[in-house]
Image (cartoon, rainbow, N blue to C red; front, side):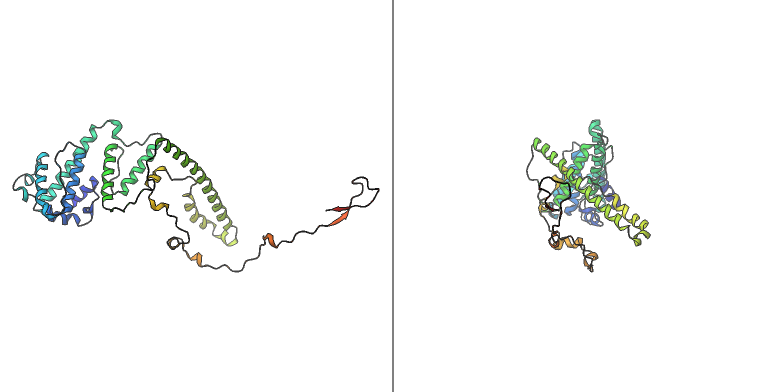
Amino acid sequence: MEGEALAELRVLGYIGQLIEEGALARAVSEGPRSPPFTALCSWLVSELKAVSSLEESITPTESPEDSETFQLEVSGLVSELHCPYPSLTTGDVTSRLNDEGSCLQLLSFLGSELQAARILHARQLSPAQRHVPRDAGGSGEVIFRELQALCQALGMAEPTPDVPVSQLFRDLETKIRDVRSGLGQDGVGKPLLSRTLEPDQWEHLKEIHRAMCVEYGCRRQMLISRLDVTVQSFHWSEGAKKHGTVMGQLYQPLRQVLCASSGVTLAHLLSAREDLSVITKTTSASSREKTACPVNKVLMGPVPDRGGRPGEIEAPMPSWGDRRSGSGGGGGGGRRQQWR
């Protein structure tokens, strides 16, 4: 039964500390005396209130001494929801959750109520609010992929095309708040963009972004072309001609993932933290940990002198010669020196 409860919590999008193996069993064994268990129940109720007209709420406890208050709140909650389980509605209020079975039954009941409330809430939305946009002029599919990646990063179930947009963003906001609360004050860091921009400033920022993307694409295309030319030069040697097919099989998969267009958007600016403004030298120890390789230790032997030093080239000496006959005029047939 604990495995079923854990699977149901994952479907509902729970990513708290009880998702780890064995954590839920320990919390259920302690029941209302366990702060993680009460926090889980509080999360289920908060999610339920977001999609229903539920009035009762549950406050997570901070110590085992608050267990009686928690059970009183649970009693009012199950009464409002018309819970059908006698173990949760009859008997002494402060002893209804003293066994693991009752605690698991409470989690199962709240989870099923949350699923039903989400379905009913989705049916009440307008068609424009119900679906994640996927065909909005080509950008809908991009938005849907970004939302899928966001849900995957947060440990949530991937959204389906028929999921309500409002519900999806409400779930995302709840998950992000839960994740941030567990990271501490300095876990995320301060944003690099610390001020609020006006609409006209956003338009100027978009223009700057487009100009930089064009410049970046030009520079990146040049580097990619230089890479192609360099790799082609490797095939000129006699030894490389024997292994040309193998070299192509190794190089082409790496080359195909390189593109000249930039993947940086304004969303990256909004999510950037202050640590991105710190410039690290390429020769620093932290950078060398990722760039060091055996090639750096290879010493080149003597190479032929190719010249090319202007300071060592002697200036050409002028030469003297006779003027061609018939050229020029005057001078009485005298001889003139001609500079060549």
